[in-house]
Image (cartoon, rainbow, N blue to C red; front, side, top):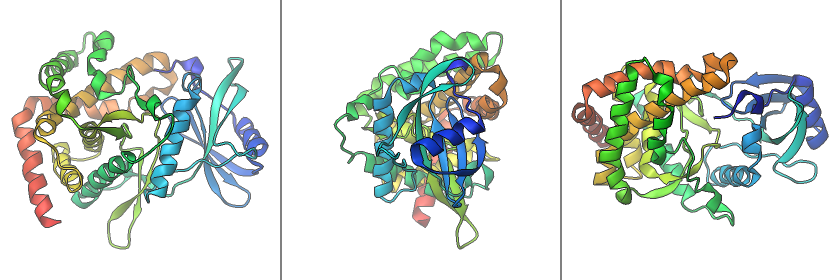
Length: 356
């Protein structure tokens, strides 16, 4: 978790100066975008072009190789036909650069990129039809299949062993459970952690490994209206949680976040699963662990949100978006139980697949 003093807080004039200095572009307007640990600023130039200036927090900025490989992955997926941003080259031909900036804590080094702007609105702002959820599952699987083909001399940096958002590292949550002290939710989280250790961990060897986006969520998926009456995915953004993981992790993360936006969250899993399995059918171990992996992601989201608020109290509203929606869904899933939820998911996925 990035502490408050590590998070960039550039002013509009500082952002405009950086864009002029490194890209020879003249901004006509700047708009701050929501962000978890970094800073994102939408830049419109006098020519009418749009970009996103992304300034990494000081902790992430200390690992430019990791950011470089993630940026290459975005470009690789873009070349493969997926709607991902790409980094604009600076006047010296670089994808990114370190800049000394004073955000109120003295001069610190921040890693800066200027990314292409993708049109659309977050998927959280539109109705989630079964067809759109199917498309989400399918594009997530397509993305991970493409990433298996990616080559890069420093690809190994994406083996992020202690990365706290990795689903492999669910047991690490135990040391932060104190943020739920006094909250009955703590017992549910403890139960999920126990199930993870006893049910999921023994099946690791059967999970198929791959590179994953790792944060395929309701704010990182952009959509726009299509020629019919529905929507299509127009953008996949924010690759900062990208790492080596497993296919089933990506699927579980996707299902969890899309549940936050649906009036009947349990129904979300079936359509996403059908889209996913149209390209990457799950094996028996992956199917058996999907329920607990989805609940594990809910636990990560809730615990880390509470922890982050202790570090960034002024950003509480944004940090708690997923957590506030997720708590009642986690309770409902846990109380409903694995057997019933799986029946809903796998039965509706099978029915949906017959229609597509």
